[in-house]
Amino acid sequence: MPSGAYNNIAVLGTASDVGKSVVATALCRIFSNAGIDVAPFKAQNMSNNSGVTPEGGEMGRAQIVQAYAARVAPHADMNPVLLKPNTDTGAQVVLQGQVCSDRTAREYFGDTSRWAAVAFDSLGRLMARHELMVIEGAGSCAEMNLYDRDFVNFRTARQAGASVILVADIDRGGVFAQVAGTLAVIPTEDRALVRGVIVNRFRGDKSLFEDGVKMLESMTGVPVLGVIPYFRGFTIDAEDAVPLSSVVDPKHAPNPEKTGIVALYFPHISNFTDLAPLEGDPSVELHWLHHPKPLDSYRALVLPGSKNVRGDLEWLLAMGWRDHIEAFRNNGGTVLGICGGYQMLGESIQDPYGVEGAAGTSFALGMLPVTTVLERDKALSNSCGTLAGTGIELSGYEIHMGRSSAAGEGTMPFAEVTMRNGQPDRGSDGTVSPDGRVMGTYFHGLFDRSEVRTWFLGRIDGRYRAPAPEAGSSDPFELLASHFEASLDLDALFRIAGIERRPH
Image 1 (cartoon, rainbow, N blue to C red):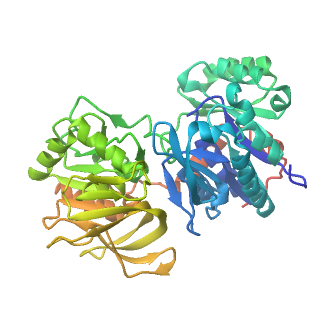
Image 2: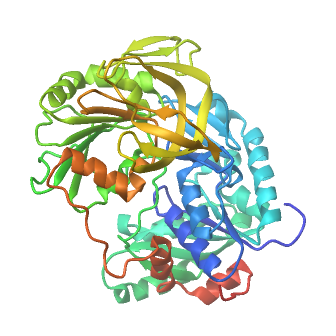
Image 3: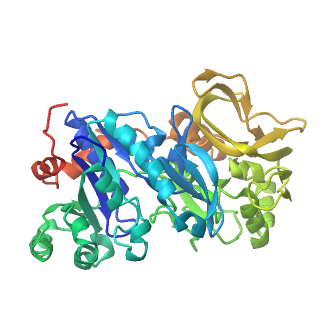
């Protein structure tokens, strides 16, 4: 453990997807509101949903969101080890914001000491700069067959001198077994670090679970800090799969009163949160599809990002999607490709260095006169500019190995770029077909700006009208913090953190 007295919080889970990321985000804002210099940390993420930091590093989107909640600038030290799965058994390893290498699962987990050393190096720097760390664990903190190789949960908590809050998800059932079972199997010295339990995602009348709280505390000897009601007003960027609330392969067509949009759910999909702003628009119905079907009832088709573009292109063709995509486009539908999806819309994808597997060339959908070459160095930038021909401001971030060039008559760029990583830029991005029905861009997060959403949705559906702002709406981080504060024992929380509450 680094020298000095540290009082940090580690948010660990009884399982994957119990809400650790949201709990950590809420705590970041609660502590920040109390005048505390707080920062998030997750030693290792396994996710293709990443973003770009101000200094041009790559890290998981969840920790970027947590940094915003803490009111600090995102930094790659907050997620020093990022695994980006690119095959069923392998992943690209990103260390402290930069690509390191590709590893199979056996290679990576065979000896995790190297990765742990990098993670703890980053943790030490953050602890020297900030008053309090909110640390997020990974998966279940009690995977006993992996315990000696797991540096993300209790090893990080010990390294940081952190008190552990255990998060359980009552919505999935078995909350007593989740908590008591976890505490029963972990080593005694780690069990002693667990200072509180949060029961997450409760539906219904909380008073009916008051006896359940007493039973949990009696069974475990650990206080329950709060029972958090299910919250629908805030969505944190998911780490490794589209949210459970998303509509995947529905049998029904979209509501004809809404703007129907379909997106392909690639095996190696990445940065699917690009579409979250569309999914959250009450006038839009977004469907994710694995399996091909006629697309007549939709207004737009989106090909999202991919961590293995050639592999997902092969999957798309093998599944029989080409005919449906071409028919949709020929019948007047709009097709948008983002990053890897943009590359698939071109003529070919060349991989001379074997970046995504065996070196070679894949012939793509041919809907844009674009050739892509995958290169060894990854392009990472926060970018801004304007939508070509409109003057509408555009901002987002770029993460891609490929460089794409267009050579067709009548095409135009998707965007005119004015800034990359804080430096003036006079380049362009993407390609648009002459009739405007096929578009490709490298800008992730483009729909985060309401003006861009309104432009796109109005373009594909003349009936679309942007929803009026809700009365009383405010910062979603404040909504999240208030939601948790109403159900948490804040005095106990701050005692566990070993820190005094101060007015912000």
